[in-house]
Length: 146
Image (tube, rainbow, N blue to C red; front, side):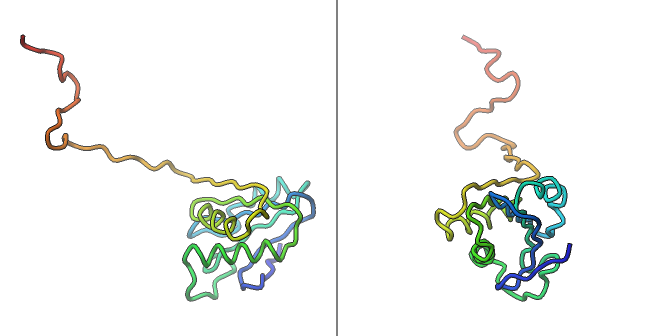
């Protein structure tokens, strides 16, 4: 489906009608194509919108404004343009941060938020104990002399 242009200049795909409207926001270095399966699944019952954030997909003609507040303002403006009575915002990776920013700008307008990341962030482990700490490695404390 051909993308439409929002007032901010970002491009988006809109399918069907229904409530709540589902608005999908992709991660960095992606496009609205990331959500193609979700769009196909939910368009039967909902207004479904998949956004190409500035500098991504068909929204490539931007030289600046890649900070979270500006991206959130783009999304909030699009949601207001849609005029849907009920909206659920769905974001992946960077899109999750954009969804949260837009939600703060929209106040009570979003009825639901969903955020997702594709990989779990690992917590680095210390290779040695810090100053004044004993190692808890295998066998520590297992043999004591009294």
